[in-house]
Image (cartoon, rainbow, N blue to C red):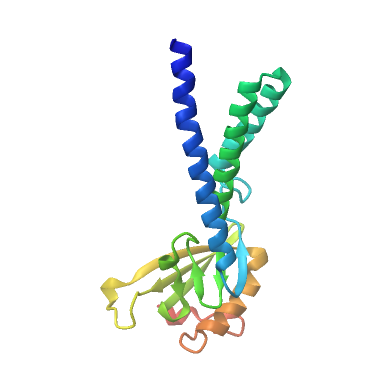
Length: 193
C-alpha cells in the first residue's frame, strides 16, 4: 500500500510540473519569435554560455533515461521520459531567458518580460570597460524623459569580444545623435570625468 501511494504522489507531482514547464518553454520561444529586427544576440550562461543548473539537470535526466532504457522497465522509462522532457523544457526556457537580444528598439533584458526592455531613447549615458574575455557596458537609463538623477537605473551588459565591433557600430548609430562618446574609434574618457 505504501509503494502504491508513493507512486501516485510521484505522478501527481511530475505530470503537472512537466506540463507547466512545457507551457513556459513554449511561451519563451514565442516571445523570442515575436522579437522584431534583432541586430545582435549572444548566449550568457555560466557553463560555456549555457545555463548551469538546467544543463546539469538535462544531462542527469539523459543519464537516468539511458539507465531506465537499459533496464527495460516500462514505468521507469516513462518516468525518465517525463524527467527528460522536464529537463529539456527547463533548459530551453533558461537558455532563451538568459540570452541577450539587441534590437532596433533597444536592449532586451528578459524576453519573458517585455516591460524590461530598455529602449534606445531611455539611455542617458554609458561607459565601456574591458574585462578578461568580454567588454562590460554600463548603461544609465530612466523610464521617462524627465526622470531626475535619483530615478536613473543602471544596466550592465557583458558583450563578448567577437560581438564588440558590431555592438559599437550599433551604439554609434542609435545613440550617436544624443551621446557623443566615440572619438576616432575610442571613447572620449574626459566626457565622463
